[in-house]
Length: 597
Image (cartoon, rainbow, N blue to C red; front, top):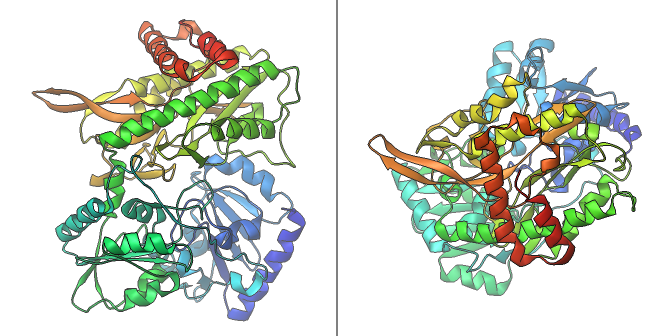
C-alpha cells in the first residue's frame, strides 16, 4: 500500500466524524467474530493506517492519529507508518497509556467517541466504558463509520464449507454437541451463542477458507437443549452436506438472520455467552434475555486433544519435518549459487509443504527474516521490502502448515556465512531456555503461565528479555493460535488456563537485538502424563516437532551435560522418524544435521 493515500483517507475519516459529531474514532483490529486474522471486508485498520501487522488499535482525533501495537510490532509500525501522519504508540511500555486511558486524558467532558460495536468484544466494551464514563465522555457503538468513506470496501468471502471427516476427524458432531450441552447445563443455561469461528468449526466438524491460513468459515451458531442452528451465507453449504447436518439435528439458516434469531429467544430462559468472544453489537440483539457469562466450553474441550488426534498430529509432524528437510537441503546447496531472498524462502518452504500428504494450506504467513529483520518478531517480507540472503549472519524462519491431521508451527534459525561470537552466544542462551521448558515436569492443573520462567531463566541470566509469550495453544487443523492456555507470565490466570493432558502448546523463547538480529527456536509440545506419586499427578511435555536444530550456532561450553543429552536425544528421534520419508540430498542433509555433539 502506498503511504501517500493514508493522509487522504484520514482526512475523509475526520470529515465523516465532523458530520456525525464525533471527537474521536477508534478502529480495532477485529471482525464480528473477533478473529485474529481478518477477511478483507473488516481490515479497516490496515486500510486506514497502512500498518500490516496482525494486532493494533487505531485512534483518530481531530488533530492526532495514533496506532497502538505491542512490542512484537514496534519496529514494523515505525516503518509502515512513516510519512502517514500516524504516530506509533508503543503499547505495553510503562510511559504509554492504553488507547482508552489516553482518550480519557486528552478529550474534554462531553466529547463523543465512536467505535463499531459489531467488532468490539463485550469485555473490551466494559473496559472502554470504565475509562471514559468517569471523564464524562460518551462511547457510541451504533455506527460503522468506515461505510461512510470506504467506497470500494471488499465484500464478504464466499468460499464453500466442507466436512472434516474420519480418520482425521476423531470426534463426532453428536459427541461435541453432547459435551457442549452438558457444560450448558452446568452453567444453568438453556441456550448458547457462538460467534468465534474456530469454536464453530470444531463443534460441527466443518472447515472452510474464509480467513487466510485458518480453515474456518464465517458463521454464527445457536445451540439449544435439543436444537442446533448454524447461520451461514447461502451457497456455502451444499445440499448434500446440508442433508447430512439435518440428519444429525443441525439446521442451516442464512448468515444475515443470526441476530434476528438471537432476539427471538424465549423470555425467562438463560443464554450462555463468552464476553471475550462475542461483540457488544451482537449481544445487543439479546437485550431482554437473561445471560450467564463463561468461557466458551468448546475452548477447553478442543484444547485437550484426544489420543486419536495426538496420533494424527504426530503423523502430520513427520510430513512437515520431511518437507523442511527437503527445503533446508536445497537452501544449503543453493547458497552462493542462486540469488536467494526472504521471498524465495517463503516460496520454497511453502512448495515443499504443498508436496506432502494431507497438506491443505499454510497455518500463517511465513516469517523469513535475515539479520536485522529477525529482530522484529512478526516481520513479513514484501515484494517492495525484503532482504537478500548473502554475507554473514543469521536467518530466522518461522512457518507452519495446515494438514488434515493437525496444525504445525516451527521456528528455526540457521547461519549464513560465518555468524559472530555474539550471535552464537545469544543462540545458545535461547536454546537453553527452550530445552529447560522441554524437560519440564509439573503438577497437573498448574497454571500454564507459571511455566514461563523455566524458559526465560537462562535468558534473564544473560541480562536479556523478550516481549512475546513463550507458548500459545495450537488447534487441531484449526487456528494456529488458540487458548485457553498461554505460557506467558503476562497472561491473565483463570481456572480455565491451567495446563492439562492433551494440550498442544508452542515452546518458543527468543532474544532480539533491534537493528542487529533476532533468534527464536520453536517446537510444539504435547502435555502428557509423567508420573503419579503420593503428592499427586504430574505431567511432562512430549516434543512433537521434528526438524534438526542447527548445531553450528551453539557455543558448546555453555551447555550442561543434561542439555547436550537432550539435544542429542532429540536429534536421534528426528533422524529415526524422518529417514523413512526421505531420500537423496534431503536424507543426507538430515543425517549430517542430526549428528551428536
